Length: 147
Image (cartoon, rainbow, N blue to C red; front, side, top):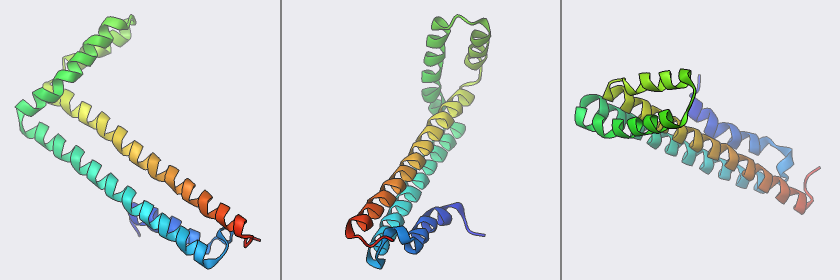
């Protein structure tokens, strides 16, 4: 079984080589190269982001001083929300968050930011994939090679 990263890189690359929508073999090869580059860049960005999140989480888990640095913004944000939200249930949840230990708050913040970054990287890679397909499909239409 192949890994997700391998499928994300090779899938669009092979599909573009086999696609008749891309016209000539040269155009299909160019499209495959662009997909390969996009897949490698996206995979590298995902790996770097995951390593940064993991390293930061490890530092927080091992060092209480680092945890305090990351916990302060969480406390500030929760306090700001408690002042502006009038729902008693929401305020009860926010109060529970504020009562969590510093390491837990810090790890929660790191997880939230990490998931946001990983989602952005993935979405950006998929968006670029669509742009690549469109570019080479349009190029084939202009060349009049497409059936």
